[in-house]
Image (cartoon, rainbow over all chains, first blue to last red; front, side):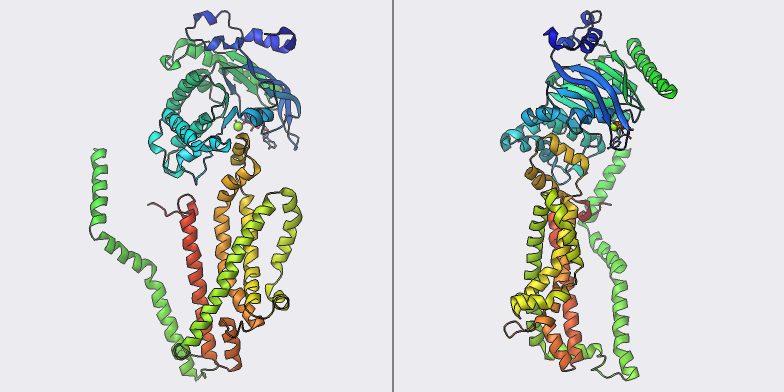
Amino acid sequence: MVIKKIPKAKVLEWMAGCRTKGDFDLKEGHLLQTNKKEMVAFRQMSKVFSNGTVALDQFDLTIGEGEFLTFLGPSGCGKSTALRMTAGLAEASSGEVKVFNKDPKETIRNTNDIAFVFQEPNLLPWRKVIDNVVLPLELRGTSKKEAKAEACRVLEMVGLKDYATSYPRELSGGMKMRVSIARALAAKPKLLLMDEPFAALDEMTRQSLQLELLEIWEKEKTTILFVTHNVFEAVYLSTRIAVMSAGPGRLSSVIDVNLPYPRHAISRTDQEFSAYVKKASDQLENSLDKRGIG
Amino acid sequence: MSMSSAEAAKKEMITSSKKGTKGKYFGVKFMNYFLGPIIAFIIFAALWQTVPLLIGMPHYIFPKPTDVINAAVSDWSLLRQAVQITVLESVIGFLLSAVIGIIVSIILASSKIIERSIYPYAIILQTLPVVAVAPIVVIWFGAGFNAIVVVAFLIGFFPVISNTLMGLNSVDKEMDDLFSLYNASKWQKMWKLRIPSAMPFIMAGLKISCTLSIVGAIVGEYVAGVGGGEGGLGYAITVSAIQVNTSFIFACAIAGAVLGVSFYLLVNLVSNKILGSWHESAMKKEQ
Ligand SMILES: Nc1ncnc2c1ncn2[C@@H]1O[C@H](COP(=O)(O)OP(=O)(O)OP(=O)(O)O)[C@@H](O)[C@H]1O
Ligand SMILES: [Mg+2]
């Protein structure tokens, strides 16, 4: 690392993120990755909408390559806004967000490295499942054959190979969500942004998709920014949790989750797991209280 | 247990579709949907036939159904020719309004600046009564076939434009974001997102414009008269009015209505074919 380029705030945060104590307990390498290259950086980022709503206030956070970072916070605290800004779909009012040290829009223009999974599946109803998955590749001009092959691969990954030639309306909600995830994966993103992708699903489907997502994350080495307001989900999935408070949206604390992967081995009633859930819940409550006082 | 009952239901479905239940189903459907309208039609025709008889209305004021049929049969070749010509005029007019309407809309929608500056005029033009400009069209294009086609085109053109533009601008925000995120160019967005999203709107516009184009053709004939010596329905109606051949006017009007309905059904069929596989509006509901 080149020290002189790193601002002080970031060094402090990086130090906080260093898991000198926990790192050595882990067999899996993921939690060592904070030392790796910086992927996303929010620097004093604020967002004020034209109607005067302050969605984000001085948001400051850096995310390293290979992390699974979750934004956890109450409704309206600016989680979606932060994610959309990371994808270059909204501009910062002040401060900045950088992906690979570049403006997200520029990153997208040059490398197509960012993919987004919305809360809704957002599939094109006139395209078959496979043609929906092919879309990002098609748009960047990958050859048809290659694109189809890649689409088949990711569809198999999410367990929907048999539905390649179905239309979206023939699928259940959970299956549509999986297609949407497959489409994002087909783009081979280095950064995957997911906005409450499992919020509308039943508990069983949600758990199996969470497992699938973790498996894919470990296999593809993608960096994931995930949004949820479910504390269990946040603890179960993430390497770090960014707890946010609302009105205006602020980062209230960052929790390192030093639980080993693969996590399907962890029971959700496990003591350590519960401790993290409690910690995250407390932080969340704190942030709500703060809002009450302020 | 539930497995077996589900299997039984499946078996039932298969055997019932094999056996004659389809016939029975058709019978029920027929009773539900067609019996009422058919009875209403018979009553209507009977009243139409008897009331003028009872009050002694002469056929040149208000012809009875039998008068209309007689007129149609005796002047069959005239009627057939008139219908043929009107069909040709309105089909060409409709196709022009569809093709030009869609192309113009796409060009308008491809640039916000162009759209903002031209759309208000498109709306104002739409409210312009085409009947009022028909004489100008005749002056410009000469009395006859060309002028009639242009009137049919003009009247069908604006519903296509306003519907297509509305469709092209009704794309879901997140879908649009998705395409931006995957670095889609303006034209990729147009072809792969906006036009497919607009399809149901475009089809609705075409359905309106196809029946209007017949109105346009007939109005055009009123104003422009004969095209190359042979006239369509509008011309036949004008001539019959001079001759007070009211029964034949009725026959022409009914022929025009039948034409309109057939044209609509045809466009509807094409629309269902195109939208069939993806848009809910055209999807048969599965019970
Ligand atoms: N386009 C917009 N114009 C004006 N205000 C907006 C807009 N989008 C979001 N906001 C406001 O910004 C704040 C943050 O919204 P955001 O959608 O990011 O919240 P969120 O954390 O994702 O909430 P949820 O969990 O309910 O999805 C809210 O107060 C919202 O009202
Ligand atoms: Mg949200």
